[in-house]
Amino acid sequence: MGLVVEQHVALPHPNLPAADWADSYCVRLDRNDLVPMDVASELIGRAPRWVGALLKIRNRIVGAFGLKSAELELTGQDKIGGFPVIDHDGERVLLGFDDKHLDFRIIVSVEPQGASHQHVSLTTLVKRHNLFGRIYILMVTPFHKLIVKTFLKRFAASSGLNHRSA
Image (cartoon, rainbow, N blue to C red; front, side, top):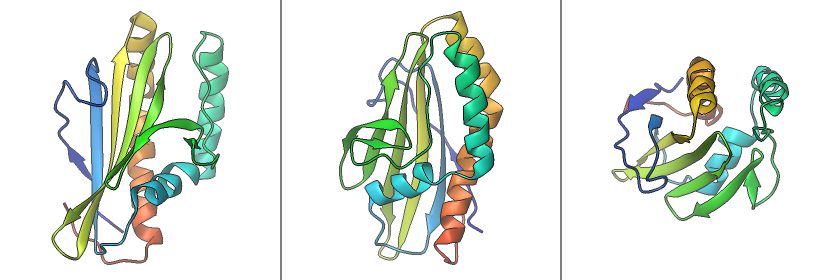
């Protein structure tokens, strides 16, 4: 399986300049033909069942506090995994939305590494607006990290490739 590596995220970040929380993980793949929109759909749109179950629990809890729900499903070009596509180009897909407690962005990027390798990274940016946003991030961070790493490991394994660390 591919080695998932944590990356540093510099703040402020151009995709959410007011972000006050961020993380990023990547995996290096032995291929050069990956397209960001396809990668984002595969990573986020095809989650393991246990992730879907966690998300349902999350939606029930945060719905009571006025946060938007999120569903991990393939929902077309305007959404991936229930998250609106804000922008995309040949190297990245930007997903996310603004909510009353926090704003967030998910960046799925595919960057060339030489002639025959690519880095696939998943970066999360969050701007917490209030105490509930801070508590929410504190509570979900362990799950978030596990989910992101799982997404990247599954993607690397499903490609059936020989992977090297970043």
